[in-house]
Length: 189
Length: 268
Image (tube, each protein chain N blue to C red):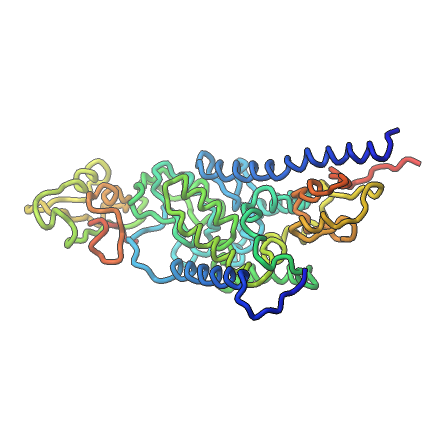
């Protein structure tokens, strides 16, 4: 294998530069601050710093969840935002977590977040036209109520943050750069 | 007793047959592993395999999490112990049989250059550095970019209709790092590979050996080996990933796969 000491721009140089630029670009796309949809950690999650330290990024909770409620972010950490499914507090994710990042808790009193309504986006806050989140929650926690104008409100005490309302909201599930896209109700921690 | 020529052609035929066999078997094993994970029928990944009351945990991941949290997590510790025993038993076989990196890395234009000098110390430094980084950053940093972890999460994302973008992006970053450094990821950079290699010093099973009666050193085995091992001249086989490419490539069929190095009794 002889070394070619050439000042010509070789195929090797092209590949190295392309590869370097592509990976730099991908790293940037991955790590830049992006607007994201509100999300919470799965039930039983340790508090903020401890969760990032303890989660081994194995993905078992995502596999275990029957509702497909949990998703993975770029770092490998699990989150629930209601877009893919909603949490029924079955505790399967807690059962399979090997490192104890998700700890057992009583499903009767479990709360992973609180629903918050974006009144600019919510159909029922513009016209008395939609009642999907209210009717969905009737079967679960009865934490959403409609006022005299048929606009929904969230009872923060009753809400467990299960994200069923987010899941059923008919607004677009696409989350884009301008806040014109995205659901009208989301879960905050 | 067979004539030398008959023996030679018989051995060549044998090596041709196995030549087709090994890469396919390895590829099928790797694909099946990821299909199994992606199917989500079984909640698991290479980071943690559940066996009921306990499991097999990635030792590097377990070390990072325990360093990041500063606590002892018994499930991870027991799992690591079991996986360390498996590594001693099977050496670096994980690298060639399960890790998808074997098919993605080692294709850079400069990966045929020689690896580090004082390789053992560099590997110890890499392992220590990964655990130290986890302790400093309070998060298992390497777990985020670990190629087999990224692939497992990609398989799970595919199985749950999630996004494959992080998987593609992280793999691209790792391949980019490999090409920019001019080294081979599997041979020189991978912290998992470094840990497996250090432990494989004790590995007694499934070793490749040359048959000195047949071998006339032509160095083809070194050319195909991703770890740059030469069956005629190398002394330390702890970095052998049991891929058996040498066995497939040897034109004289001089490579033998010995299941056990443990010699019980020698007659005579």
